[in-house]
Length: 576
Image (cartoon, rainbow, N blue to C red; front, side, top):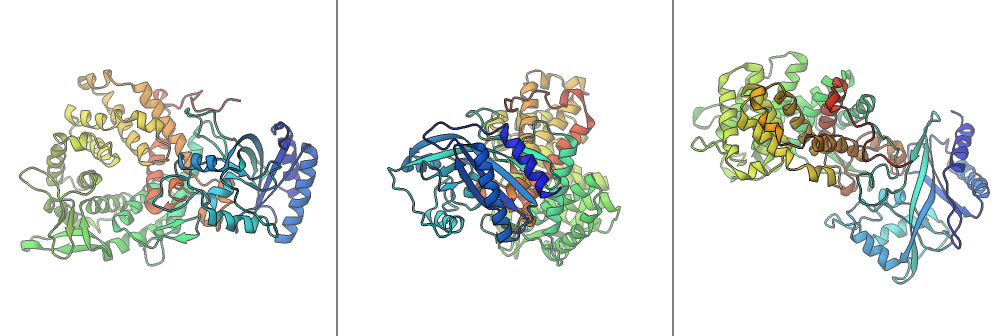
């Protein structure tokens, strides 16, 4: 749509949504952001007593900036100050330190006339509220503030306020105009610590998760993940958009698990553009990362994590998952012999006397490195064995999976883990052994965790995976009359609320264009998932968990079973 028409739409919209602030503050402050998708958005603001005059002044400055930067205006965003909280600068810094890193959603004005104004989007995209990676809170970073101010207010000296000086914390709302002219309302902060307080702040308001929305986000994230696979089959492991910096480390287990989720997306979407990158990643995995061994003449294979040269139990599990999914998609038996050797490797890491797994071995000698490291390795291993059994029907692997799983039942650490891989494994084993003890374990793994699901501030995408694996168990339990006693004492209404809440909350971790426009290299950053509290990190395994959870949830929505439909009036819906 022509730029003039889109600007007219923005003008009409702001007239009905921008409230006036009380004197002595400026009655109206409009913040214009514009980008063509290549560099960070250009941001400018105007303040005054008249909304009409603010619009005229802002439009004049916007056109001048566009001409100077040679911008066409692919992305247009308009924000306004809706609420203000005055405090000493020192108090604002304390507020930041009481807020989780990345979750301080206020802008900042340094003077009463709002001449020097920093929006929340600028602050978080430039890591101005991010001091060091070892600090969990939103600490003000003076160096990054100075760098921002130099660029934003060129030719104007901007100094940090004295600790006792008054500053103004800004709550803004806005509207984003897409290239086709569609307007998306961008709400400000919600009313305190309620289910809806964190929803939608600074991004489009979506009150109902639809299958179409799920498909769009899955497709975008899967294509992003496929684009990270280089010609040699290795992933670009991750990237920090705030800092325009690639992560230089690598994790072969996460290579395999991310490949598995990409293959899930290929199966779900039918997007053939994903297949060739996935094939390259699979070939790299089996030719470089997987090694064959023969201790005491018995052949087996392990995924070796490079460059640390160690074998992780979970690595074999997720490699089996990826190879099994590839066979689902292609029908090839090419990797079945290797899958058998990987299963033998899992068996090698199990103590036959008690069924307990060893977690980490030295790759060169197969000597013990760590007996226990992280509990999700166990779930990955059993889940992988069960997926192998699905393909071969070899009773050795079902028997090994059951005996291994039985060792979890009497260990309190597993019962309290609330781990999504354990839930995947539980759901899978109950397909073959629909026994009360397994279902009880699976339900306990999730049902005591619902308050955490409802209250967790970070995206935490594995929570949706945990919930969806449990939902599948509940569906099957409904058809097993002899096990109905398991569900009678459960708060299924709370479970359903938590399930839909978490799926909707995960949209907070999606890079909508109205957010990605503030970051460098937006075409690389946008249309996938991130972790806000890690500097908006986009890492392959982060995206993996979002994809897997959203595939399961969107598939459930498409089944349209009445008891699993999203609520018509969800508790996180914003008030009109």
